[in-house]
Image (cartoon, rainbow, N blue to C red; front, side):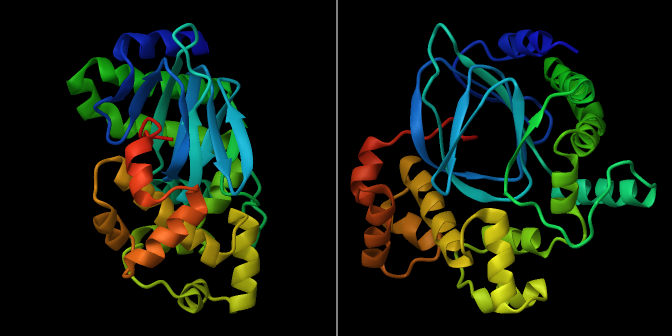
Length: 297
């Protein structure tokens, strides 16, 4: 399936800049014809597939630019700086955002393992990074096109959406990111489950000892394996998740104090100090100066 067919389909479905729902749960299309500088964002478990233009993501200081040559696979929540600095009217960004449902991905992974799937999984291994850039293949392209076609008809989307989303998940698990995704969603990946717990409990106290215990590891082993996956220590990761989440909420119109409290800060002065240290601006300056990166980073 040619990526040009997918591009033409997206052009028809989203003729103006912005983010639009497709009618399939969580699946979105986006377009940008003006540059958006990198800003704090949270990658939720997802696949982002670009069919024209390029996006940029900075993960713990490492810059990644990706375009239609590879899609991004992110099986766990992760704090990033993201944007579309190269978008222009002559070369607009077109792409799709597909959420990865943890339950379905885990079910598929286990079904494939039980059926003797062709991709070997090294027991005990963890993904070495929290994101992976994967080459497109025919199975992924075909499944994505079939999924996005549903956006042309509400009834088709309602009736066939879950089945075609599952088909795309299967293509991902068999594709270039297959080993990476199957390790992340496999029943044994305690680090991924720890990250899910952090992302779901940003407004509560998070203990590194508790996370290590949940993972069935000593604090030292947990710290080492967590940093292997995310490139950050657990403490750095929790702080980045909280600050990025708060920055997105402030840019979206929430007050500084509300945003700070929503991600677990009880001291406004501590929040302001850490925010300024991370982004070089006070939260109030940020609220006046920043623009969110298309909602899907």
